[in-house]
Length: 113
Length: 112
Image (tube, rainbow over the protein chains, first blue to last red):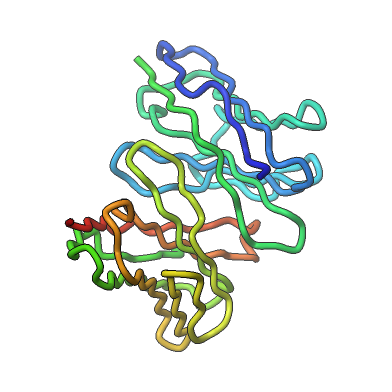
């Protein structure tokens, strides 16, 4: 069964460093999302992406964040200058056109020291 | 502010019993609703979705939607210890980039 994959599974970085989290959505899906979950808190929407453009972004998704689909398979989330409060699980999700159902990847645990 | 509310629990049920999980949502524009299961440290795993008022059954799971009351529920029949997890309710908001708005989740513990 096709699934969303994410790398790395765990990323440790120093405050102020740039990180890139990678996702490979399900191959025939056209809509892509990033969510994050701070330990013990809700899953929060960050950004949605379709047709090489951001569809919507939350107030969390400030100028430090960017997304890109650099090729036909990868979807990346870049955090330019990480802060301690960026420590969280980051989940990528994708869905088919015409369906509301989003499938989540296994997540990347980001730890900012 | 689009909110989804869930009782955090924990909800404890004995093995074989029916577990009933509830969720309310604030936005009448919400069009579809999802139940995800999340084990500790893992990603949300889709269990069921529901669009229409009424009940939808899939194996041991039944989702119920009442749009007038803005209420969604999930029933798990014949609960098993492996069902012990956090259950996340999510509302889909089409006019907001098709994002999902999640509740905080209900912890379910099934005791053998």
